[in-house]
Length: 237
Image (tube, rainbow, N blue to C red; front, side, top):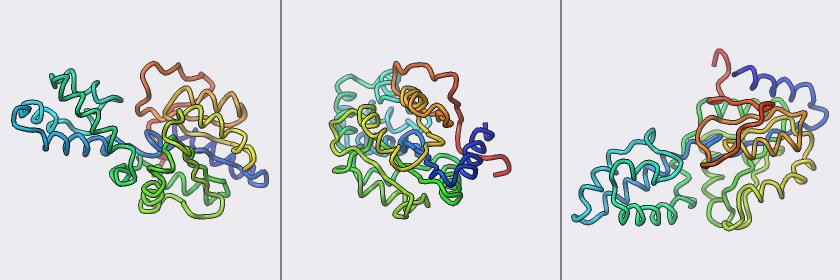
């Protein structure tokens, strides 16, 4: 589906005078955050007391590719006890949404060059994420910088939730008017079908793309007018 990505680049070129905007989610979209979860899981397992040695061994064998959307999706079928699973969920929640943990995320294939190309062609790049400012702003900026994404430049916006407690989708709905103030939205990228559908409804003339990574259980079907891709690679790259 590299033609979809090329259509967005062409739209940026054609509408440069109209201040084209491309919106990117981070977790599950530009970034694979399964390595973040895996580090937390393995550190937790390594610290378990001897009476939970079997569960620890099971968890230490888990790879990033094994991880489902929720920890229990991965660990319960492997026989991890409910008591340890609950402790693991708490450890994950305490460490996952932190500046430090952002360093473990890995950019999706082709993500860095594609976002840079959007920027170089004249688009305003918006990172619109469910991460929150108090806990994850510093780590997010550091990761974007270190991984080579445009950041700290004119026409680059990093938009995080002001509080952890605000639901991600409610926050993104609240930001729609602000996105329109930046220019004409020509493309959006999400891993949640519901958010992709929302963007399509708001900007029906744009190109709206779902990354086929992971999404929350019970998500709605993707609107047939939207597109799905596996990564950000273009032909010949």
